[in-house]
Length: 159
Image 1 (cartoon, rainbow, N blue to C red):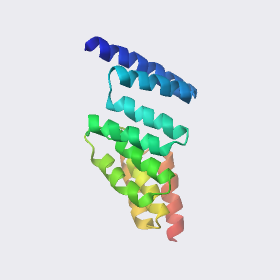
Image 2: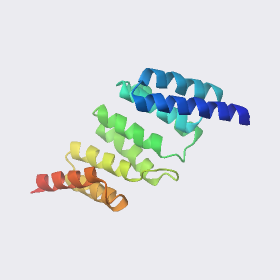
Image 3: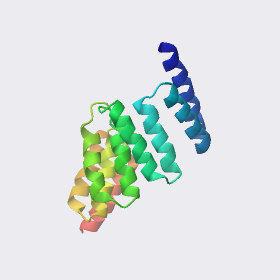
């Protein structure tokens, strides 16, 4: 079993390298191989991310749902589903997923779901809720410039 886990991790690492180099098709191939040998929530989440980069959001959501089945405490797939739903213009649907990411036991970086929630609220015209979430992101990551930019954009809309 330990050998399978090690082999799967090596394939995952190879997939991630291709992913970062922008060869998404190759990354998908290796993420799938890793999952075949030893499925992990992280591998499914990253496979979903790769599909999202090809615009295949429904498939990306399916992969994240698989990740959640394997590890419901991992926050990344909840946030990712929320962000994919935002990309699809399904803002209301994104909100509960992002809220689950916020309270997930295992999740870094914690400011991302707040930023995504702010974007969803902004798209829904809920400016005060969006501002609150941008401020939450800033509290968690004071140096994260996109949160400051979003906060100022929202403040401008409220004036």
